[in-house]
Length: 249
Image 1 (cartoon, rainbow, N blue to C red):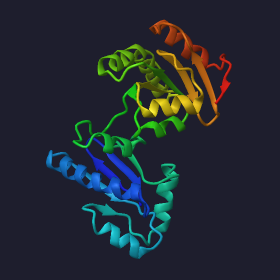
Image 2 (cartoon, rainbow, N blue to C red; image 1 turned 90 degrees about the vertical axis):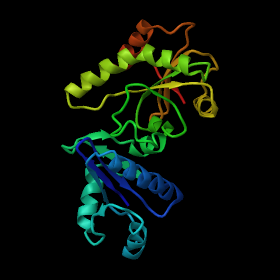
Image 3 (cartoon, one colour; image 1 turned 60 degrees about the vertical axis):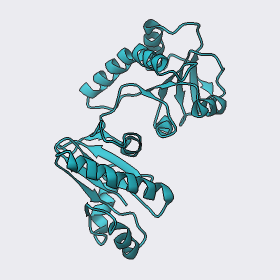
Image 4 (cartoon, one colour; image 1 turned 180 degrees about the vertical axis):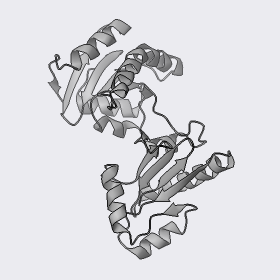
């Protein structure tokens, strides 16, 4: 099933099927819905079902305090799926009041920000890699700066190091009404980082500046003793026009 959150600040659309991840997201989303409503913000949710039968749709929808596209309106549900490129479930897409996409990672944001302090969840230029947002690594090329600590101060310093370049690229492509060709992450020391290093066969060095393109099974590695803003700029500037030679993942 899918749902749409609509407000003066944002709207969202998400899909669900009979699966544990969908139900766990729904439980959190119901609570988020309540909190946002109680904060005085105007918004709504419209469910677009992916259930296999109208009976299962009605049973599940009975637990939800929002609206839904009628299950019988298959044509509208199909159009919405095509419009927002829904390929997997659960899926939560956040839209602004004009219907423009704020983020396609609504599921990650809702689960990460249970107090809804950052609603409507505008994307951050640089984010810290976690179990929740690691799925974004599959969306396209990602610059990942690996650091050797889970310390918040060091992670924040790493974010500040690469954010100027991230801001510049995002603004450049937004002006052309296009999505940025890179996502930007900082990865500390944790199980997710260890798994990513193992999967991509990266060296254990830190700091380690990389660009990972999972769909192309390619990686680009800048293994130097010190990462500076100039090094980040040079690395990205060479990557975008395809001047760098990829290594296989």
